[in-house]
Amino acid sequence: MSSRIEQIIEEIEEYIDRDCKFQPLSTTKIVVNKEHLDELLRELRMKTPDEIKRYQKIISNRDAILADAQAKADAMLEEAQAQTTELVSEHEIMQQAYAQANEIVTAATEQAQEIVDNATIDANNIRIGAVQYTDDLLANAESIIGHTLDSYTTKYDGLVNSLKECYDVVRTNRSELDIPEGNAEEIPNDGFLDE
Image (cartoon, rainbow, N blue to C red; front, side, top):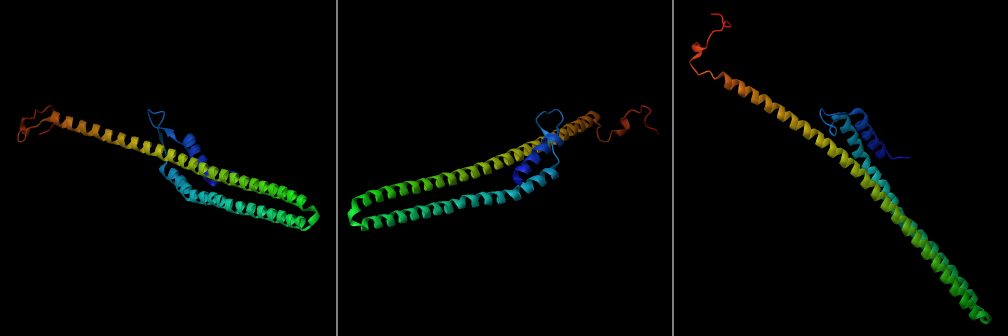
């Protein structure tokens, strides 16, 4: 089951792939509906902290797993020590009791260490997975925002260039008129002006 953040990222990708058209004369830049993209990004921002809290909770469970493993290890050690005490109390089998007790303690210690090691590995794997997942989400968001920023920068540059061309045309046309002040009566009448 995918998280809502993954669903939002898929919606953004589908929106870009299906609904956005390429900018004229470009195969890499697209035109986007700013309101729609802003709505998806806003929801993504709202959901990201919830996902991070969820993974932090998983990581915090690591301490509980370790504590449980330690409790089991302590119980095994207590049981081993109880058995050792019982065996030692019988005088005639004292040497055998020590040997058995040492074996039990060694086996319990090894088993307890294995439980603690496995719990630590599992907790570290969960933490690494959560960090990697969060980094992947942020990388996707960074890519989408960067792409959107590039698109708007290109549009702005195009508008400025278009306005400059219009400005240059108006200046050129005015300079071609070149009417000196006070000499309006010298303008020839080509039949276009009625007196």
